[in-house]
Length: 210
Ligand code: ADP
Ligand code: MG
Ligand code: MG
View 1 (spheres, helix red, strand yellow):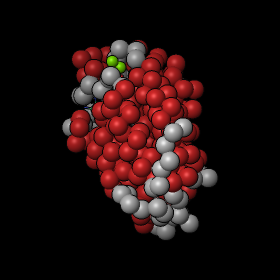
View 2 (spheres, rainbow, N blue to C red):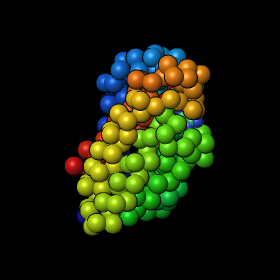
View 3 (cartoon, helix red, strand yellow):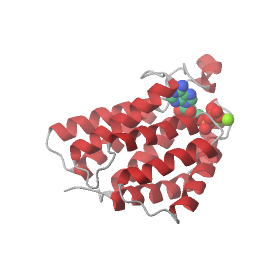
View 4 (cartoon, rainbow, N blue to C red):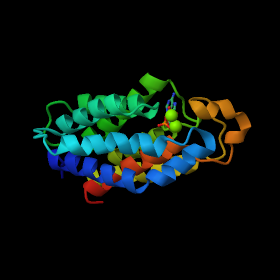
């Protein structure tokens, strides 16, 4: 089984809705260890994505992801805009020209997205950032693909690992971004960017029919 442009569009539509539904929760996570704008930043970005999606006639999944990338980069002021924008841009690049994506393509896409965030933000696993959702997601997706999982199962494994990764940021001290100014006061709070990345990855699995 493969997924294509309809999957990418459904993923983005699901993301627009989940970001809007979790706006307040993401704001309150960012209030604890940042500046209380993460939900607002992402919702602004994905509402702009929603507007553009209505006029886009994508021919490939990469067309959809490229539009998300440029929209997030141009409309989200906070750190998360360029970071996630680069994730979507690199993800699009990894599947350029393809109309149908299999399990290995999905692993390549997720890996490229994660590598894009690292390229931009230089965070390592354990720094209490969105990387702590993306990296376990990539590892779980690769393991699932190696074991013969189909696309929905690969994406479910990624989303499950991202959820756990986001929860596992709670005891960490932050070493990147605004939360790093707090030192030990960041302990006990979940990283907002890891949480939003896990929401985004869950929508990828739902769009594939998990
Ligand atoms: P800002 O911090 O500019 O207000 P947001 O609140 O929208 O931006 O995003 C904050 C999130 O960005 C953090 O929770 C963290 O996950 C992520 N982040 C910040 N800096 C980095 C980095 N260098 N690498 C990866 N992720 C980062
Ligand atoms: Mg913030
Ligand atoms: Mg901010």
